[in-house]
Amino acid sequence: MSNPSVFSAESYFATQPPPPTLQTDVIGVRTFISKQAEQGRKVVLVTSGGTTVPLELNVVRFLDNFSAGTRGATSAEYFLKAGYAVIFMHRQFSLQPFSRHYSHSTNPFLDFLEIDSTSSRNATSEINVTPSKRPDLLQVLTAYKAVHAEGTLHTLTFVTVNDYLWLLRAVSQEMSILRRNAMYYLAAAVSDFFLPRQKMSEHKIQSGKGSLHIEMDQVPKVLKPMVAEWTREGYIVSFKLETDLSLLIPKARQALQRYGHQVVIGNDLHHRKHRVVLVYPSSLSPTSISSPASTPCFNHVPLSNLPDGTGSVEIDGILADTSAGQYTESWIEIDPSLAASGTKEIEEDIISELLRRHQSWVAAAPSAQ
Ligand code: PAZ
Image (cartoon, rainbow, N blue to C red; front, side):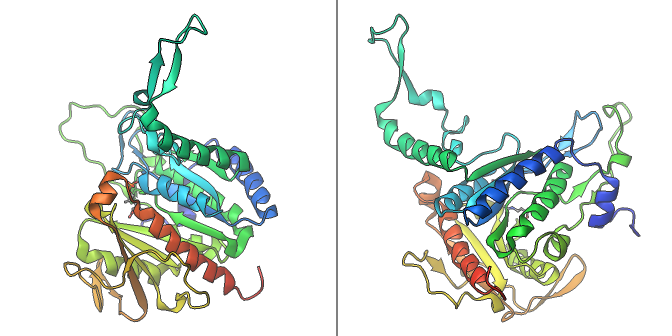
């Protein structure tokens, strides 16, 4: 660790303690993976929701971010539907596959239930599901029960960025035995800054001394060791969130250039539910397989109000070569009103495209998988 505020992944894991449940979590993941491998399933790790950054050891205050886990929970359902086994690593209490349809704030389940006071079978009244809500509920419940019966969903939780990093490393290392049959879909909104344990105050930070100054350290860029060391040939999909649209494509390209993984999905905060861009090295074009019958609706050209991000660009003080040709973009866009009403979910099209590309990645393995 030459610059004390910039941790390498190695120095991070050497100095920050693992979460107490790590060993138990790893055993559960190992068992799940070996069962899925026996059954010949592909496995995807979906990370979802935001990480917290505690400010005290006895945590009273922490930094957090906006992510509700919608992208991750929704995507996990589409992976399951496609026959993948899913390790769903999510922020505690964020949205989860299936139950997300009945979130306490947007669709409280008590509103789906009625008391049948006409029933005379018991002294107590019976509960019924509101008839108009039954078809949707039946659909979700059927898919949920099927996934449970098949044992294809394994859930892990994190809260802090430290929990997240330790879990990500451990799960990735466990999944590496699947080689190309593993996909990593990193949709969690992970803090870029944290307070190392050694700098935290033990007790609640006291007020009364004027303003509060906290200097945070940069969270190590773990995609680098993830690609180079933790996973073996796995198909890695990272996400890039920006609020400045002009940075989206250059930063996605820069990430591919720096870390050497397979896809970056760029999204901007306010349009993320109906528009994303998949950026990938042009060398990974899935030509070895034909398109599925239900190819999603794509816009292969950037929308007119978006920058195409070609050429070199200065990012974080570094001149990045983001030349077009080396990278290819596919925009996926759905009708915003359909996305807002929940009639259509953009994740359906994202996953459909990734499945095609992952299949191509598996087929292109140097030796048979
Ligand atoms: O959780 P959500 O559905 O509200 O938001 C999803 C998202 C924007 C967090 C995700 O699509 C994403 O971009 N994750 C990576 C964020 C980043 O660290 O750049």
